[in-house]
Length: 118
Length: 112
Image 1 (tube, rainbow over the protein chains, first blue to last red):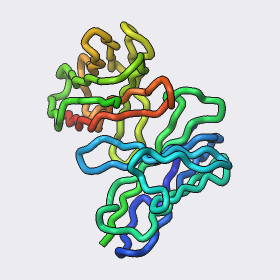
Image 2 (cartoon, rainbow over the protein chains, first blue to last red):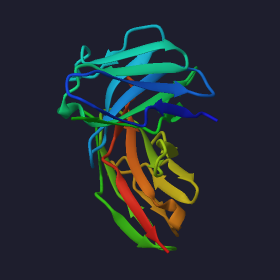
Image 3 (tube, rainbow over the protein chains, first blue to last red):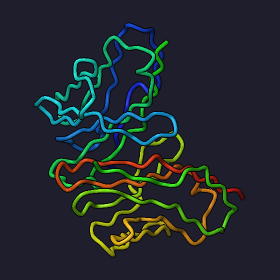
């Protein structure tokens, strides 16, 4: 149980285009989903926290107009990288916290999406 | 702000060797501490946790003790197996936002 999927697992896009990444909780409902970014050989950096039905809360330094997050249902959150540039190339990971969960140990991670912008 | 520092890898061991991966943290208050493991092609999985000082988390033969005096949470296993090959992340959860701060990850390679 507690599986989180991401789609696509990897994507290559041209500079200036937009890319959407989906994060789904497959067998549980998640009121809160998190989006992380990971650079090679570096730690995961929290980008934003999204709660179902409300606006996402972005971490300091993350451009909310560039990284659009939508959390329209209890099982789906999407991250759209708008007008992507090569510096946006990274590994994006989502996680989902079970409904009623109050601690990070009830948070489950997706396998990640590798974005390459050419 | 909060931060987590863990030893750089890769760590290469022979099967049945003893494993230690060091992790130290900086945080205000009393965070909860975690070790996550990421197997190739899979998402991060919680390996073990400790929520207060002197707690010992354990799972699948791995152990880590929350040492407040040294702000450490080192991961240990007495006898590693090839199947333990993965990337290990140390993390802390702040008591306010319940957000995770991760270390940079340590790749473990176990050779038969």
